[in-house]
Image (tube, rainbow, N blue to C red; front, side):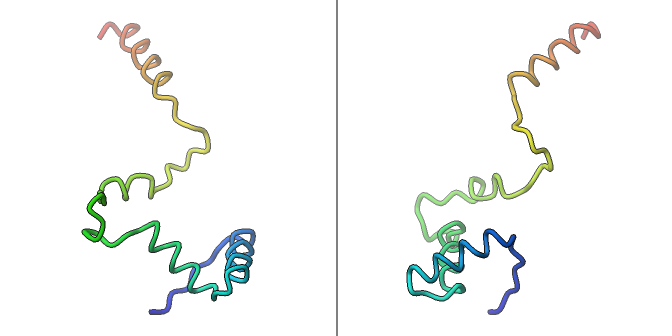
Length: 83
């Protein structure tokens, strides 16, 4: 199967360098990396589809989510509103 992927230049350079270092094609290194990251469901007894899915999206937020701060802010709001 053929697939076109647009990579940031720096990542493409790293992929090309790794392929050259290992004496492999860029396609082979990319396929190997993707297969390791996304194993076939059921092929690994420890494979968890939900765990594999988590983190696959992008929230669009650049800062880390602080659950403790968010909880404290929510509690403050609830106290202020008398809920």
